[in-house]
Image 1 (cartoon, rainbow, N blue to C red):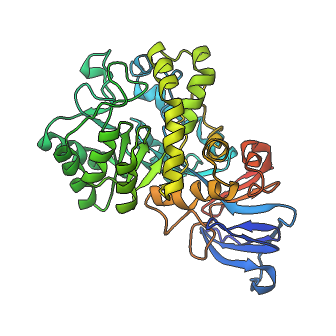
Image 2: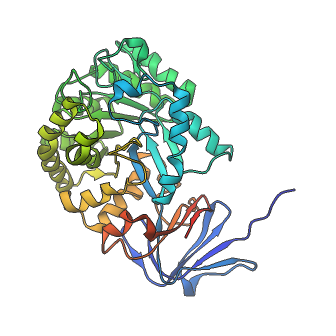
Amino acid sequence: MFQVHKPIFLKGGNLIDGNGFILKSAGIIIDGERISQVGPLSELTIPKDVEVIDTSEYTLMPGLIDAHMHLFGVTSLNLAVAFLEPNEVLLGRALTDLPKLINAGFTSVRDVGSPVTIYIKQLIQEGLYQGPRIKTAYKMLTQTAGHGDLHMLPLEFNKNRVCDGVDDCRKAAREQFRSGADFIKICSTGGVLSEKDDPRFSQFTIDEIKAIVYEAEAVGSFVASHAQGTQGIKNALIAGVKTIEHGIFIDDEGIELMLKRDAILVPTLSIVHRLITEGKNHGVPEFGLRKSKKVYEIHQINMRKAYEAGVQMAIGSDFVGCSPVPHGENALELDLFVNDLGFSPMEAIVASTKTAAKAMDMEDEIGTIEVGKYADILVVSGNPAENIKVLLDTNNIKKVFVGGKLLKDI
């Protein structure tokens, strides 16, 4: 026998809509998974048999979205250790991160590389676990000796997909979709936490990236590119990727390409911040600490330039679940957008809702409080549009709805 759920009426309070506006004395009516009405209380038509929740003392807003993270289940940022563990162990640990994300108000996440998240997503869909909405890239695609190729281990230990040449890259992309990936993540430059390369080094040819983009677009999907070096950023954009991850050494030409191609930049300030401030105490390899310190200042400078030029930017923490980057503290990225890049609190909220939803290719379904969209909604104590730090304290996140289901209630 099917259980009939009453509509839910969130009555009163300020409403941050995700588009950059606040509506006072507003209400939301949830019918099943979706929002059926939203607006001033005086304009709503209240259904019979509705469940009323008084939110008059709180702020209503869209659920937060982390557009760059990893549900990986690792215990250390020393990836040589993590890659030696069985996927079954990683999966078990990663499942414990789901309630931490909900507790922090994250109702959707874009996992940009993990061997286990396709299974976590399935378990949530089957109702065996509760957690955020997930889009996952499954295994990152990397060239031989690239950022995703763990250089210090034999190739057979790699949990990413190494591919070289147009044909192999094409096949690798198809393999990810066959396994259940929602989109493709590539590495078009070196990185901070890869031992034998440099963030400025370009990886994959334009033709290789174009082949991957073609395969993604052929199935209605997209490509996200780990891209830190100047030329590797431009190569990825020329080839047609949707999002640039990190973007550390982006130049004026790269910024113009971002604007021309309507691409989204996901800076991931949080991980570099945590590597510098806490990494030494948590087993981060020396090369990672050294490279983080070298890029930190130029990263902020270039992200401010991109912001001032009008590049679309989305919130993404690059947290993986272990210290010093534990899930549940992902909202640090919003604080860094405000304090390091000069975003207003409202602009940071839009970056973590509407723009992050676009980075997930789900802007028609989530990211703003609008009729017909999924009821991914937070009830928050305080006004984060005035003080972004409100969202860093999980005690201020009073209620969390994901698809109309109340997953947190304090």
